[in-house]
Image 1 (cartoon, helix red, strand yellow):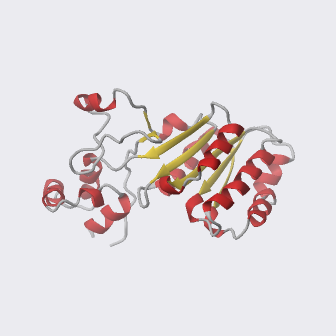
Image 2 (spheres, rainbow, N blue to C red):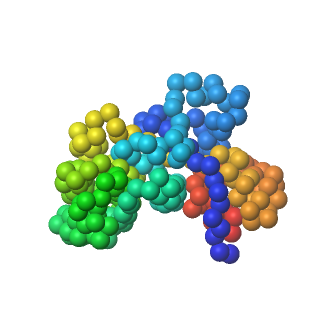
Length: 231
């Protein structure tokens, strides 16, 4: 069965906040009025809320959907006509290799040589780099600092929450004072599981009942493992 692209509405919360989960490990839907009590002291965001933020650290657990959301954000931001360039960090073997690849990229070179609009810079998988995360993170900071010499740079970086080097977040904060958001992608909601079941033409309530009875909520809360359960 070929995996389908499910149009989930995902939510982000500030790094370090307790996620308002239900007894199944699913996110309590922030759009449902009687769940607002769980969000009284929390901020939550959709991608539309984030496009004006200059620097985003997009965090989350493995398989939670960070890369997919980064692609959606890139597509959304192309509507505002930024120059954009994306790199998958796991393909780089050294800081020098990364820096050369960025600065020699055609889009980046054109932007450096006179483009007046901002550059959107998408970096996926800081934790998956062939270099350990701490080492590649120093290379990222060097490149961002270099790019800032030429104009406004919007930076979007995905990383597994537990693998984010503290020094890296501090370094980005220094480059983007009061313009950095470090946010964590929340698990799927019950509504998302029902949506996925519907997309695959599975009885929605029966599927969710099975998840509840077999205590599979944690697996169902992540798109990658939800797809396995559906198959």
